[in-house]
Length: 111
Image (tube, rainbow, N blue to C red; front, side, top):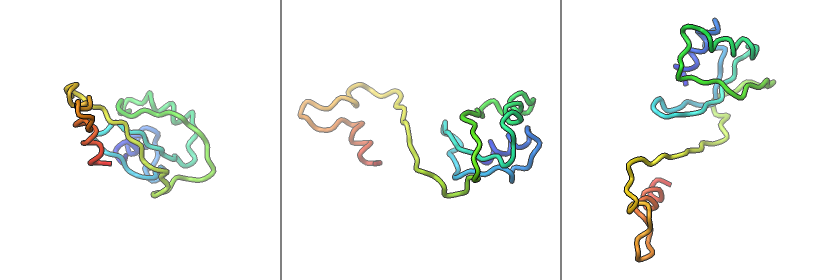
C-alpha cells in the first residue's frame, strides 16, 4: 500500500502524506485498497495514469467524493478469494465414506 501510494503521489505531484488508507495490504497478493486523496480532483488523478513514472501494476477505479478522510482502523472487514492451482481432483471430491475432502479439511483448519 505504501509503495502504491508513494507512486501515485509522485505522479500527481503531491506528498504521500495527503493520502490516507484504512490498512495495509500484502505485497505479494492481488489486492484492492481504498485510498483517500485529500483535495485531489478526480480528473487530475485520472491524468496521472499517463505519467511516464506510473506503475502499471496499480489500477484506479470507483472514484467518489466523500466529506471524511479514511483513517487507520476504518476497515469494514477483510474478504478473500482463494485460487487453488495444481490440485488433483481426488483432493477436492469427498471420499466414498462420506467424510470431508482434503481441501475441505485444509479450509476448516484455517477458518
